[in-house]
Length: 128
Image 1 (cartoon, helix red, strand yellow):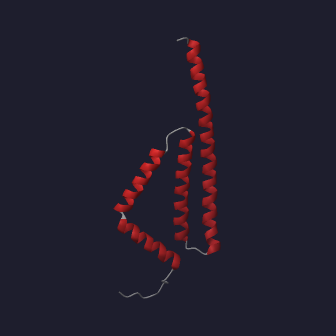
Image 2 (tube, rainbow, N blue to C red):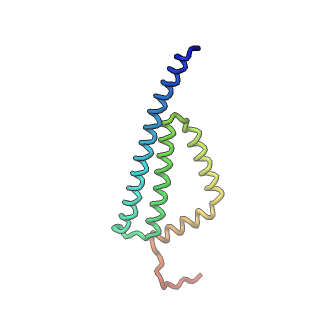
Image 3 (tube, rainbow, N blue to C red):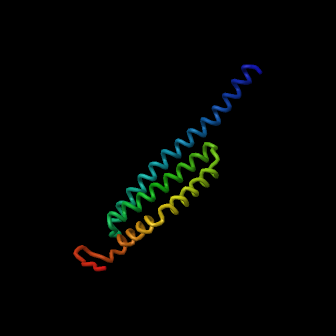
């Protein structure tokens, strides 16, 4: 095998991989800017809709995490990393965590409902 063939192979590999890396970095940077913009809009739009600050913070944090997961999977797909096994593992972890934290997640859902619907006010007396 001649040095010219090795050099040509490495040059072609570097060119194709370099383009993928640049494209992935571009998607990562633009995605990060979009997530920051969406987070700012979510936090400010809650003032218009009159949402509780805790609800606004919870939903904006949830959306930010979900969008970053989508960006991560998109970048992995651009780089040619197989994402089916990653998505399967992520779903399995979600099911395992959901089953392990069943009671706590029920309490979390109840707390979110109390924050959204506000059935109680400060000064209300609650008896059991």
